[in-house]
Image (cartoon, rainbow, N blue to C red; front, side, top):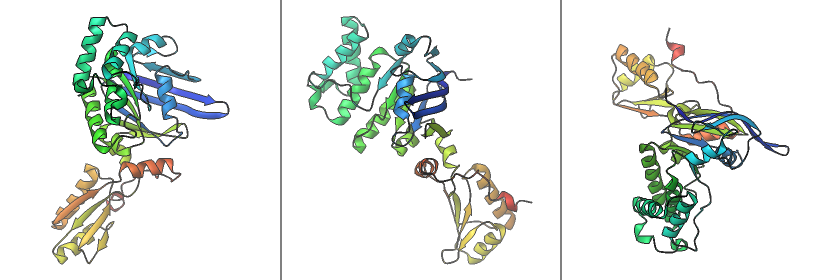
Length: 321
């Protein structure tokens, strides 16, 4: 079984009479990208601050990098890197000097610090701008420098708190590639974001935080299946085949003008096989088949917007007797 890089059980945090985190459980396997989604004020940044030892939890059994936060926070700090919502880059000095300063903070020797800085500046495509003041860097360049500084200490776990906020689409995609490369190297990434596409693209697992609690957790595909709206659409060119298919699939809704049927489905392989088996039994073949599933936007609004999320059922089961 894969070891956990981050494990939290019963994480709680309040500020006065406001409960920010109310019994949060998290399990993040090593070498994966875990994304924490949630609306503003949901507690995402508070969770990052606690797990990175910047804030103390009120309660909870918390382990990061195999170390107990309550017992050995210094060991946790030695194994992690953190990039917050706001850049830690000092604009008054050069990119290179920012890296050297970070190396000094990690107690690297002068020679080792210079070597690591040069390698990371090259890796993040910042070598040509290394001797320029960081204040002249674009938003994307500052973000890349921020992460490069985070990697100086060779952390095995990195917390990225909304790392692409304010970046243009090209810079955001560049950042995504950097994050993927980190995980390829064995690093674990704990990512908070408000960009649902970002979580969909990157995360191995996603948790949706709402009202201080985890509303749902799973892979992107698993989460998309917990809200209604998924369906299989079949289109025919032969009216007779269309009518036979409608008879074989009583749960379907027909569009006579388009000779198309729509069957509620969670998009799973099992549900799709049921549709195809029924068509085969009826001796009917569709000319076009498309599967439509809800996206993370649908999941997010269902879980955080007050909409009830029904228990997932297979609508085709009702006609299988």
